Length: 139
Image 1: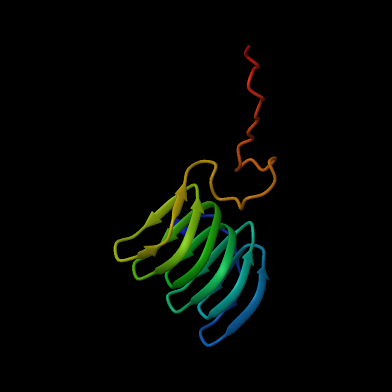
Image 2: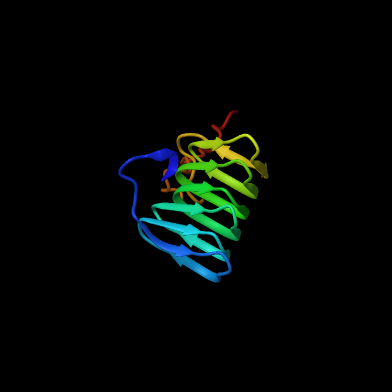
């Protein structure tokens, strides 16, 4: 559970050391990866990346806890925690980011209350609507 929260999701999936997965992973509740994953992860809930994990993916989650190696793009709707020993070569978009001493992040980071959702249509609340009016005619 991220930050030791009580009432967190139940672990309902696990990719152990020595296991490899390539493709799109979707799940409910909480999933832990200690193996190798290449592709995409999509959930509204929590992903835990253990210290033996190697991830190369586009990640769309509610919450993310990282102790292993991640390369790619991360969109977390609530929070990302990067623990000591973790290495991220990633673009990170999240409203809340916690980085422990000893963690390494290489790549752009975007935080703030409306951050964490992948770019979408103009109706996406993460993307402010912009209206452009023609300049008034002078003359």
